[in-house]
Image 1 (tube, rainbow, N blue to C red):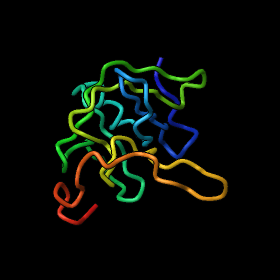
Image 2: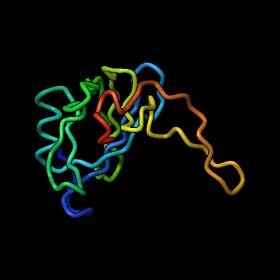
Image 3: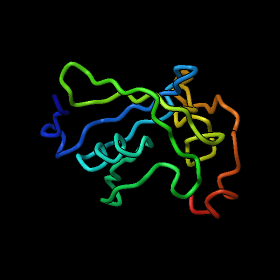
Length: 126
């Protein structure tokens, strides 16, 4: 049984979760090639919708995501990938998780502390 890439223009949603804590770290998208590479290499590869190309998470920062377990939903059009993050954070803004803001009334508030300096990692291109 394979994934259903027919519903979202050839992509499936990939939810990335910390294997040890269960915290959601990020959400990305995979096409068939990214899915194949993720399974073959053991490191998460995404398809960038904005750049229209594959990208191995951590190719610039070194903060790769080592796959520990993969699940799919009942429709097989999304995956939940449990990972061991190799680095202090996965968010390009310097946080452990991309979900570092919480809604407080009508405003978004930053509720996490930065885990690393994104300018030092990405040279101001974050």
